[in-house]
Every structure is written in structure tokens, then in C-alpha cells.
Image 1 (cartoon, rainbow, N blue to C red):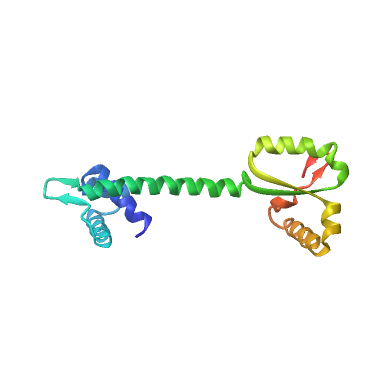
Image 2 (image 1 turned 120 degrees about the horizontal axis):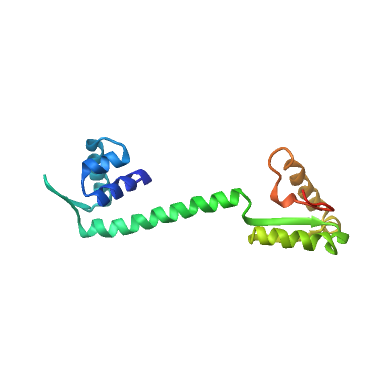
Length: 166
């Protein structure tokens, strides 16, 4: 079962007419009828009562329609979530800083960042602590930051500077 089959089902369920539903989803009526029959076979239930003059949803069809609408709502939500993550509006941000930055620059930068991206979890790491605790971990961290310069900067490599974040 594919999302297009569900889209076809919703069109027929809302139009209660195969010809209008076919026009709505931009396919011919015979293939639409075939797709609905295949969907019914796959589900093992009859979704529509059909006769020459009328199409109506069965109780199984009405129940299925409610669930399919939830699926489409969840799919739209998943798309929005992925887009927000891609824009950096959700997720995690790790910031490495020198101890002197925590007194002046860092609080201002964090306030601005948190107000703009409230769904981003921020992790703070002093560079001295990263470097002294585990040199190989620090090297991997620096490598990821350098790799971020050839494509959009890796979000964990945003550094506070005297002019803000770069």
C-alpha cells in the first residue's frame, strides 16, 4: 500500500463519484477503479458500496477514512519536522567556548539563540575541558568543525566571537 492509493481512496470517499475523484487526482477513471479494488483486496474489506447510480462508504470505509486522514496529518507533521530540523530550528547545538567568553559574549549569544530557536537543545563545552579531558575526542570535534566549512557549517561548530556568532 502506498500513499497514492490512500490519496485515491480519500478522493473517492469525499466525492462519492469515481469520475469526479479521478479528475481530482488527475488519472483516468478505469485505473482509479482498479486501484480502489486492489486496495480493498489488500485490506480484505469492501470500502464502497457501488451501483450504477451511486457510490457510498461502507462502515469499514468510514472507519478507514478517519484513519487515513490521521495518516495524512501525521505525514504532513513529519515533513514539517524534517524541514525544521534541516533549517536548524530543532535538534542540538554544541558550543565550544574559551572560559573568558562565558562572562560577556556567551550569555548574550545564548539569549538571542534561545529566543530564535527555542526547540534547540544547547550543550556548552569549555575548550579547555574538551582538550584536557580527552585529546582524541577533541580532535574528532575539531575535524567535524573543519569538515563543516566545505558544506553548510555543522551546527555543533558554531563559535561565539566578539561580533556574535559566525
